[in-house]
Image (cartoon, rainbow over all chains, first blue to last red; front, side, top):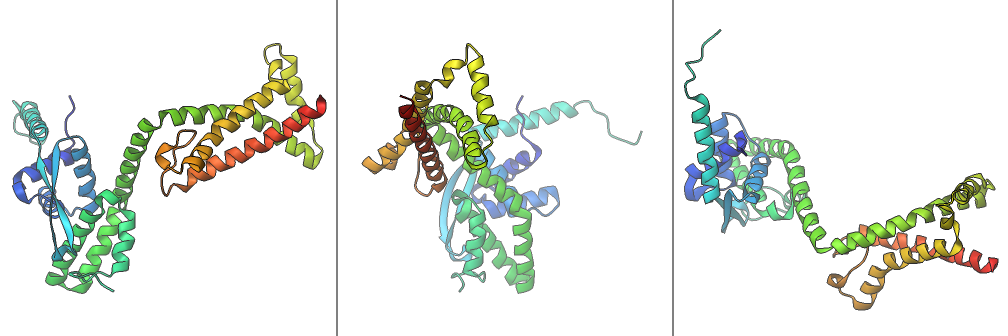
Length: 106
Length: 206
């Protein structure tokens, strides 16, 4: 079973939640909120690139804007394979925790 | 001089862009500029500069990883297109091994007068029934001639046809890839010198 890594799961979920506004900056912010820590720009691009290569994410180019120094945005969206991968992870987690009593000391 | 729409200087953005693979450069730099400007507006210049430097330092391992990944991808695509090139090159390298075994002791002998290594190699080969044929001048020169042709093929092809895409040989050479040119040229010259030296020795024997 080829499960996603934790960061890949977080990124795919962030892309899913952001919908049409999922690009580098917004994905990074969403990941930082989810992980509750600061995330570097480069650290998000590596898994984004990996997920795109694996076919779990598709990309589309946006317009160039002056706020970005005339550079375009690259938007991400989940592919059907990406949705399936997230679903598989969710089911795995639910199965894993099924029947586990509330955690306590000892 | 600054880009339009950003307080970051051009030279800095170009320098950072050099660290990022070309396929990601526009989008990654755009993200950096966008957030930098947002931090500038909210917290001022020093906070923005601090943020930018922190991002570059923390992102360096990721930039390296991205660059390596993209390089491997490009190499794998090249490998698929130049499988024959790799086969030719491997054969050329194999044929260069006896040349190296001969020339290095030969050079040592010429400069220092110490001929034991060369004599030892030839004595060892001649003493073996299975390997003695390797010392025959025809075999040595034939192998070196093959290595010469295999290594030089790409140079002749490129020189005559002037089309990088038409290169078939030991190395596929693309625009900007200077190292393969140096390697192919060095190997070719090396093999040429050895071949001419042994040809002269062979003709002198006969």
